Length: 55
Image (cartoon, rainbow, N blue to C red; front, side, top):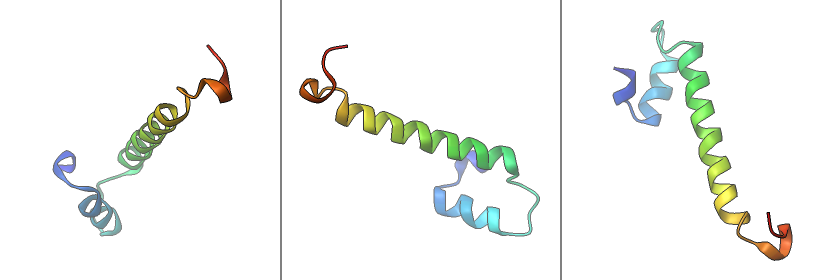
């Protein structure tokens, strides 16, 4: 199943002539990566009161 693949295996499967993964799986992967990056930036920056003030 696609959920059991690591990122490299998923990319290899995407590049193959297999009909799956399709656009939905690729979009879901990109959305999860974007959410992870947002969480990383929030964790690094939101605690800096001198830059952002209290909120």
